[in-house]
Length: 468
Image (cartoon, rainbow, N blue to C red; front, top):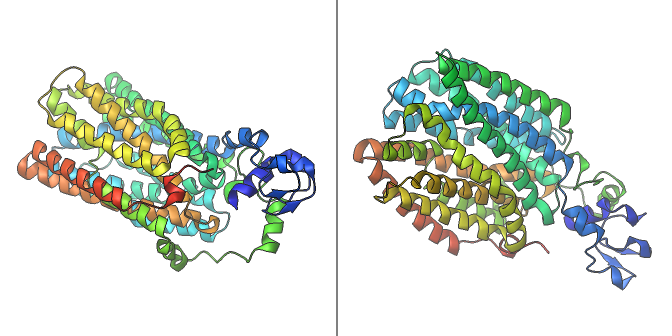
């Protein structure tokens, strides 16, 4: 149904066509989806195919917000491991606790953010804006914290903001796209987001080299950049539930939407009960379970960079540049792998990404100390994110109705974030007790086992196969 609506609304030649599946007597409506008296219209791949291949303006606007915000957040993320372990003298277990909070605390509020956005009807933009604002305010507070407890509270508040904004933002991307180009839309957004992740560590590196009290300067500049991101969201991202867009030129609130309301029963009211009831859907339930299991064996970025530093003896002043390798690979591969997922199936690409991550673990476990090691590991690390981050949300979107899109995506994100929180705690404890190599070996074995299980517990054809 959604494919038919999207194509009809995006095709100006359709005239008075309603955009629903049905019959039209207008031969000029060729290229729309549904039954038409013109046999030549069936299977047409002309204007409609070209339109569906283009990404909606809302996706680019949200990508700009994420780019700016990621410059801010990645400035902090790039220096935080070194600041905590070297500057404040935290043990790997203490850092694992804070890293788990930083990456997993948002799991507690993602469902709330998704539910508030769905229940408000047109609040996706504003719930996301509140989340961006909370994260921005937390940046200067790091200047005042020098012990484990206050730093943990600040990071928890920062991740609360991320939890509030992520599901509404991804719902806006999904609702602004058609099923045919959803993987590409998420790929474009993630590529823009990763451009910020690429610039953030570079800015942090330059600030550390140019200032005496480098960490304080990084936190201050990070706050200023975050404020700019919030302003761009308010001024340039359309409000409402997807803004009625379905690709460029989409008019989701036009005549087609009005006639669908008359033909179909009204959608159920978004409630928390309805959101959890989505897990009764076979495809979404299996996606959520697989994302959770694989998240339990996904070592956080910060530990990967610390492992590389210890293996290669990277000087502290160069540590902030390590995330650039991951970000560069992510940036280059996000759109191609998103398009590949649209063509060959999103679940195949998602599982393939975890195979790439397992290869990165294997390289870190070998005795190889060549100069190419960091490049290979960071390339594989970035490819893992390009094949999983946006692709997972595109796959989940296929199994969630519009009126609960934000809540459904939040369900998957919550399970994954909670699992990664547990992984950070477990990995930090294992590193402290048995050493980094043993901890990584255990994670590699767990990832291999979970990946094999995910191959058997796979979603149905709607996720495994490309949208036709």
